[in-house]
Amino acid sequence: MLRHISAKLSTSLLPLGCACGASILYLIESSLLRPDVEGGFDFILQNLWCLPPNCFFLYTLMRAAAVTEKASRVSPLVNSWNFENIDGPDDLPDWMDLERQYLVQYIIQSEAGFYIQGVRLRFFQVSKMCYYLGAILFAVVSQVMS
Image 1: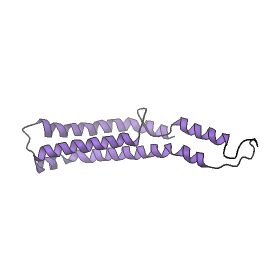
Image 2: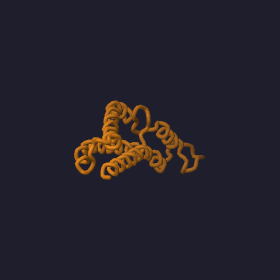
Image 3: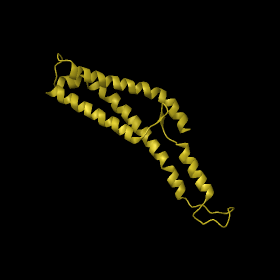
Image 4: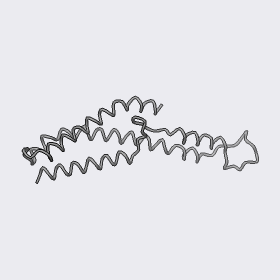
């Protein structure tokens, strides 16, 4: 079900990400490459419109990455459960439950999570995007205020 939802949402997240990237490129172009643009606080206020869409996009990706991280923690949780072995063979130790091992392997191999265009979304990918946005904003503000 999660993979079906992420497949439906990834078609809308990709254009949203491209639009956010285009707004950042516009901000870079207008602040770093145009010498005729007056800098300062007025420039920052005029171009502040491109921050909310990027922040909302990164927030959405963070929430989706959190779902992936939660899904990756399900198999250790299931592995820690203790089932009573009623119908199983008596020669197996109490800690070895073949049905539980089968269930854990099934969960691990299903790789549940949030996918965007076939790529599993992880927290470190989104955090890198946040760091890049912070570095770009720092460069733009330092260029404009100088």
